[in-house]
Image (cartoon, rainbow, N blue to C red):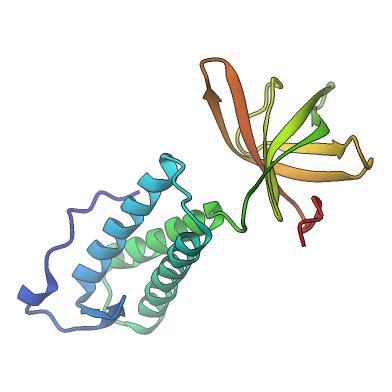
Length: 196
């Protein structure tokens, strides 16, 4: 991530307006600064696991997508960009894309469903029986004592139905001093919990 100073008010800018973001016109310099400021604010909210409600998540997704669209369009259509500006625009697109992937994709429901969680490595398979505490159409949150890290692939089996699903660990945090909670996003399964 490149370090950028906070955005200045564009009203005092004498540069030509070349990009519109959130219904405001920006010169290139202020567009890049404003994008970094918005991305930093959004990343801070995710660090605090502030996913808010579904409407807020949708608004964040739209805002981030607008940043991706405008930064991509600017990088492809402006022939007078410096190499540094091209690098910054590419960084903005990559960072915004990463943040879009972290946005909650559906309503959460508090439940208690018994599952068996599997973590496979090249040498062995670890398994534990636990209960999910929160589910959505695209994943779950649960307590786990397995040595799993963010980004790892895991498998889960519902103990009530025997159905299995594969997913990736998206977050991991310690709560109440010793209990580890993990968030898992499912691959290619949109209704494992029968929420529709």
